[in-house]
Image (cartoon, rainbow, N blue to C red; front, side):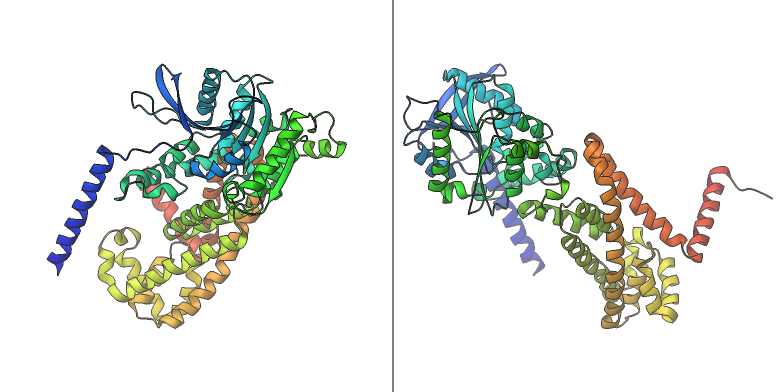
Length: 526
């Protein structure tokens, strides 16, 4: 049987290696899209083939340029483009990822804005009406900042990302480490799986990972609030990728903007193309007839609203893939260290990144899985398992012997109390398994203890986290350092302060200090 499994594994490995070799050396050629055109531009000292989709008449009003989302299939814009192109020319740039030599080029929003500017200059467009869709608004905002006044007649934000506070963890320096994790995931989805191009329907790829890692939203609020051109916002009420709250915040800080909230989700530009196109064409008609609101002529109420300070409480908890990523990371951290997992969850709940119930649930379930696993490890495998890595690094035979002796006389008291004394949990739960304590009894005491402990630690982290949010807002460049210092401070606080509340804990600390001094300064006489 073992030999059969080895042969099957070897066969699957060779099949995977062959598939990977074919993907890397004989990539599938992408067929050109309908209406696709090409333009050669000079970029960073080399020639780049710039592709774009071209809809509608080539003469007349300034063209509409729609900057797509790198996570959205380009076909999703076809219905909307056909509706708008009945009266206007519409161009969708398809940004290249390599130059003529096959070398990788920058995926950053500023670089793509520069590339788009070069393309428009080649086409001799003096003025455009600009649309940004989804994450494509990062390119659009950079483009608006770089262009001379008058070259963009109007700007429309479709399902738009923008101000940083409404995106993922709300701070650039906290988001970037998370985005770095997407590099290996993106590569795996693009190249590491045995079916070529299967991931085209998945909203994550290597290009998207590079784009996110080069995106910096910290200046977007200032750029958007200083716009003086007509702005139109269209967003779906049930968009789970980019919250509709983002659109409402953009509407608040741009006093001359207009807004349309429709039914549907993030794909509404495809599913509700006619409705979106009609809203946009109506806005264009107002632009052409000079009927759009002006910054200096909007109502005093709108101007006052735009000048109000940003309220962090307006940010909704994360949803969809961002929520999944955070829950996955918290689960992993909780499995490694329950204290760190609980503290991290509390700080995220304090920042309204996730709800308190989500924080409690993920930590509670993570602890439940980990510690019952320790019990069954001791019950099934017994003492011999602690002689093997990694368990021999976590617990010694001496710890097990000592805990087992205590457990035989005061088992349930120790089981309950160990939850509140960091460092005693593994030997206690392992000993409970070794001594074949009845699982229902173990689970009852264990369940009650974490039902008390989890809200206590979580609540403390939330209260402390609320006090620190103001500092994070002011000192954004140091947010990542503040966050980790806060996590470590709370972690070591629970590790030290809780044990010091008991006589045994104080005695152990005194012994540790004496041994540490002897190790550093040598044995003393007196």
